[in-house]
Length: 367
Image (cartoon, rainbow, N blue to C red; front, side, top):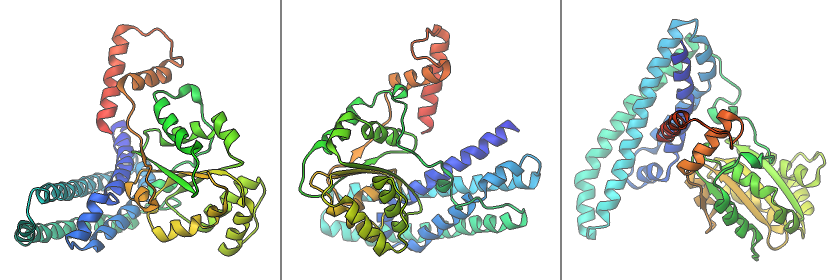
């Protein structure tokens, strides 16, 4: 039974990996450039959201309902199939990119008509069959009586973040912090934006929290705001949150026009620092609308955008992008020791130290 519960939890996390792959530049660009039916890609994303919405309830009901357990097993197979197809698309995109770099224009045209079209036909067929299977499973959720969680997708069930951080539990991010600080303290005639990009759980939010409370930031900026965005990118809500963060007062404006005018007045002539955490929306129009009142701040104002998606960072269209890498093995072991023994300077027997390193290596291999 414990294995089943763990398996369900892994499936919830694995869905997020699929959302990342669907939104990856390699997959999106391949569909656009190779004239694949991108409607299939959007349909896959929507179907995954529908499935993810009932996973919490399914993971609870599988304990007492064998039919739900069987449904989860079938869903797991279908999700793994979708992952394999996305990997196949990403591999084909990389192969074509490498081939294009070593070919003449004539060769590229010949290869496009000779090799891409068969792949296109076969892949669209595979995607269609896989979507039929997933949509069948989505319909079964109603038969099984599975209830959707609020938000209907994995990301909306995540706990909102705050700017508070326990600095004593942070390891190996000194260089990353200083890189962000150099950007924040630099001057510039325009509004400066830097995305922090990295996989889930790598420490993007923690890094932003570290710089948010740095004494140099306190001295450099007139106003600060921390806003948790998540997948639901509502310009009005984000604008309202920034106003209330900056003014420390409730905002009662109702229309987007009123909100933007109020934010403009609140930031006029001030040097501000804003963190937008967990951003998924890569629509340029939404981003452009959201930042219009922010451009009335003083020179040197900065925004940090935390995201897992490279496409979000690209839409922001700003040169500096900070890609946050994994911690080193030693720093991972320090962090593991702190959580296992409560104190980082605790003496650990050699045999337990070796087991701890194996656990750390195993966890990193799964990421």
